[in-house]
Image (cartoon, rainbow, N blue to C red; front, side, top):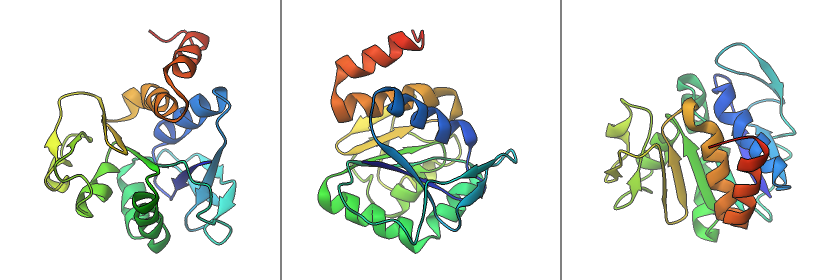
Length: 179
């Protein structure tokens, strides 16, 4: 199971595009409303999460996804649930994917030290000890980081590739007419 965490201020494209790609690949994805079931994106679109923080249990977690959005990232970072889930994902070897400003959460925890990573320009100082890449999407170990909304579809494709293989990722790319 893949869990994508939502907090008010999240970037809609960075959350919805990966969900769409993963579901096209028949990967189970649930959204977790960190503070409530109804979550408002940075552009004012309300989304109803599949489960709330109270309903979430760290079981059978293959991957977690942290979308960006400046206020959304602040809200994710201050959540004890999100902090705990990240720690549990590291311990179990689950894939951790973060896009835009969200890699800063991982960087501040020291999880990107010695790893290649990328984030939205201006947040690099929070990627403590990481080797900042010039790529738009970077996979290093159990971490995938991505630069921003413009690569949200490709970010989802990369997650598919890591979870179930390149053939499935290529199939989804073909279905959506992606280069």
